[in-house]
Amino acid sequence: MRYALPQPYRDLEHTADVGVAVEGASAEEALARLVLAYAALLAGGGPVGPGRDEPFTVSARSYPEIAVALLRELLFRFATERLVPAACEVVRLDARGAEVTVALGPYDPERHAEGLDLKAVTRHAARFEQADGGWRAQVVFDI
Image (cartoon, rainbow, N blue to C red; front, top):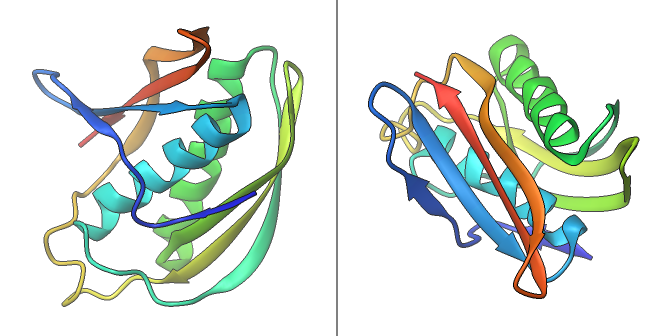
C-alpha cells in the first residue's frame, strides 16, 4: 500500500534533538509513516510536490536498524539533491531488511521554510516493535 503526506505522528520530547513516533496496523505501515514523519519535519508541514519514484534497499539485523538505515539514506538524498519524500510504499520488510519505493519531490525553500535542519538520524532511542495489536516505531534526529 502506498502512503502519502500527511500522515499522523507524535513529537517525542527530547532536550537537544527532535524525535517522532508513529503507529501502524502493520510493520510496513509503521515504516512508511516513519518516512513521512521525517518528510514532514523537513518540509515544515508544507506540501511536497510530485516527484519521481525511487527504489531503496536496506539491510540490517533488526527493525530499528532498518528504519535508521532507510532514514539515513533519505537524509543523504536530501543533503545531496534536496529531495523530500512525498509518498512511500514498503514493498518488502522483514527482520533482515527492506525494499521501499519512495516518491521524492523537490525541496522548496519558500514553501518549506518552517522545516527543520536535520543533521543526522540517531540510533539513540530508536524503537520498532509490535504493540497493542499493531506496530510502533520511533526515531530521534540530531538538529
